[in-house]
Image 1 (cartoon, one colour):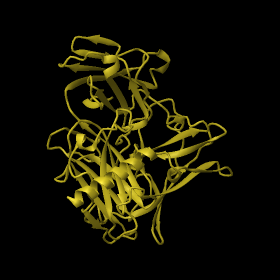
Image 2 (tube, helix red, strand yellow; image 1 turned 120 degrees about the horizontal axis):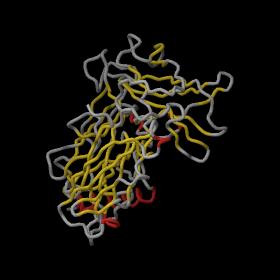
Image 3 (cartoon, rainbow, N blue to C red; image 1 turned 90 degrees about the vertical axis):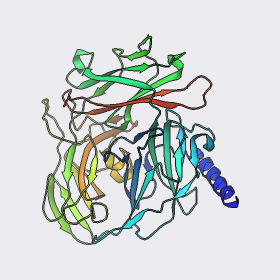
Image 4 (cartoon, rainbow, N blue to C red; image 1 turned 120 degrees about the vertical axis):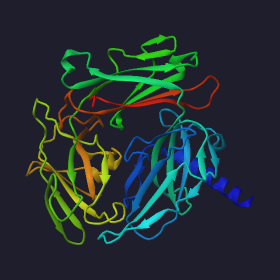
Length: 418
């Protein structure tokens, strides 16, 4: 009984602290935490969503480059559709303990950079969720709620609505070569009294939060169907296929690798990248921004894959007088941080950046953020309707009298029919 009271007190202190800090996004707070992964266990790097009260699980993992064994604790909090605290009691959305310790860890083997790999499966015997919706997983150290190291979003689907979606050319003729439009419908059997207030739908491209589009009102309301196909909504720049590089081995230079050398750590120099100034689409296979930890030099991808400093070079001029270039991909949660910001060398008219990454296959692109914070992921990459992209459609429903947003529908579609 005394232990449970202590756990509840720590959880309350943590959630209060987290709410004050606004920690409801995918973020890594310490530079010694690397290679954060969160996906449905059935498919590596898939969208982090599981069905409520099913046997599906999420895999969550990361590396601690300090090595050794540290004391990491995790908690889970329910969020609104737009990633704010639901402010509902933890007992209303969780069963089991309200916080738990990460016990599953492994040490690196035969690597220059020593690290400890932590992994967790959720839900587990200690903690399960009761309701659908958005959730944030929060990791902190030494049982101290102020020592947050990771926050990671995931979704639990209470599947009561079916979603039909399609990718079509943009409505405006001038956008038809560069943009893709998503039309979708929500099919429901349970009556929805006021869909204009109770239902929210979010469309994402390649799981990128910066370009997500929120649909507050349906275009048409039919019996059992909400239609979202307004001519002015859900347009996305098609972009271009992601750039990629391969560091599965440090013994030879694979795709997009110009040189490899070793000092105290492994160092990889990527081939120089140029802006895509072509008006024609060039097809190449990519992973829609994902990354996969792999190595051919050892036996185990998780513990035998070493870390290396990856030198990125973009031979381009700044599009506007003030702004920054970032290397962007799921490997860094599509975050815009100092770690993945490039430095411009005016004498050589090039951007440079050195990022420590684990061995594997990586998709990436270059994005421009101007002085006003405007995000542009097409200025260096170009944009084409033919580009193959994945789209995620999420439907949220707040029932009359309910105190939380339930995730009631989800679908993942591809712009290219395979």
